Image 1 (cartoon, rainbow, N blue to C red):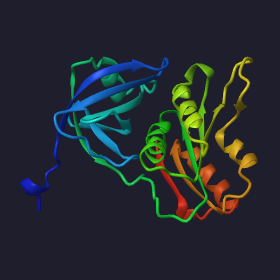
Image 2: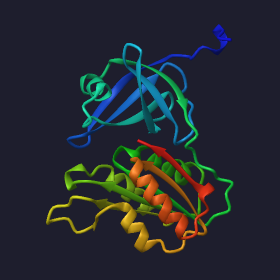
Image 3: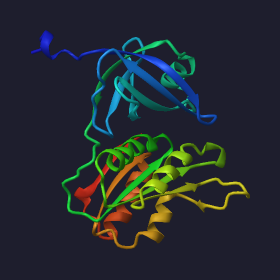
Image 4: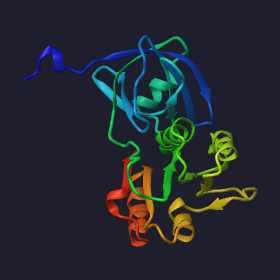
Length: 236
């Protein structure tokens, strides 16, 4: 039975900054009028039209009542248009935070793999910063970040700073459609992990991106020894 006590609680937040990271990726910081409490990896559902909501993973806490969202505006749908038109000072209505794509610290592992494509990097960045900066996580974390073009690259400085600060963190950007100037890894991140992570028996993996990547990565990880119940995913 629906009662007033179990109705969804709508919240409001105000946009306090908007950064264009690349041609397709935007980063917004919002401020609540109450503390913003969440678990890294979770998402919120934002009202983009009357009776229409879209889910966006939380990219990080920004201190106090603030939080950040990464938005890919390239799909061109209602969510993209909503954020393209959103200005600093505008308010959003949302539900959440929600979701079970969160880190499991109790697992007996030696190596954590993060695999993200495009805006799928958002919850993984949030997890990595939380584990390293707030929890003192000491096990190895390797982040494989897949994008199409060199012009799509964002947050490289953030990940490099983490790698400089924490010896147990490393990351690799992989481009599927690089130009001739690109000197890093090419192809799909699944091709890279296939050749670099030959034994995944001591690993847990967190995958965020398109369905094809998640399915292919899961098959590779399992075939190389990872227990399927230690593979967690969020499809974008």
